Length: 74
Image 1: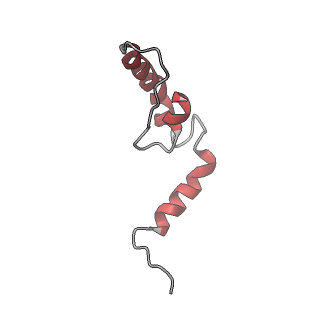
Image 2: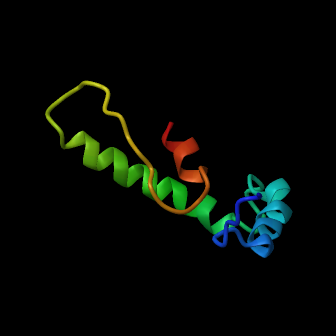
């Protein structure tokens, strides 16, 4: 018997499949996320710079953006 997963919406999968080839295009449909990254990275650096430790600090990016911010943060 096949499992029924009501949380999977095929139209959402298709939407993101269609975006996949344009995801990293800086002038593509995700342009706003790419444009925001320098500001977000500067803010993160400023906040981390206030810490008294010089050790590496692991970060977890929880949110939306499918890795666009995480790639920049890395």
